[in-house]
Image (cartoon, rainbow, N blue to C red; front, side):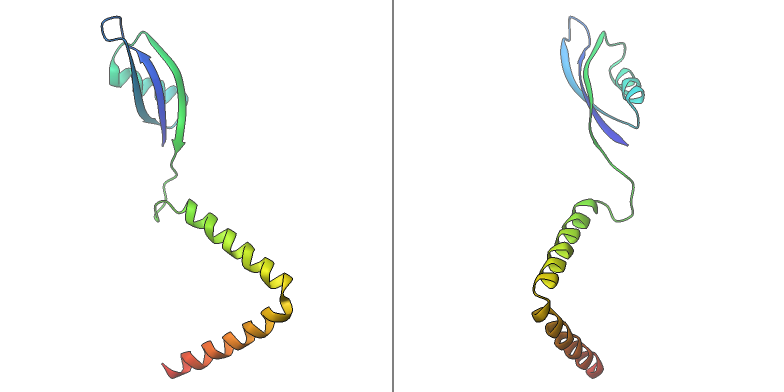
Amino acid sequence: MATWKAEVFVNSRVGRINTEVEAATFSGAKEQIYAKHGDVQQILNLRQVNSYRSSSSGDGDSSGGALLLIALFLLGVIVTYWYYAIPAIIILSILYYIGSKED
């Protein structure tokens, strides 16, 4: 579901108010506004402010982007300094193997 914001002119007694609703579509957001505020006279500047995808891990988008940047950085370092990176990877792999054998 997406979050939608709008300015709503209810009537001359109430005036303009800002409102926020949850809906999947633009027309659904308009229906939510009518359900929430009744028979409003005007809906102004109805816009989607964000959308959420359902996932079991919660907000994983930002961590996925950060991991991608880290992976690209490391790939760039390995490609640029391959003559240092390959021996370091071999040494770290041997140390990891020796460390896992002791457990």
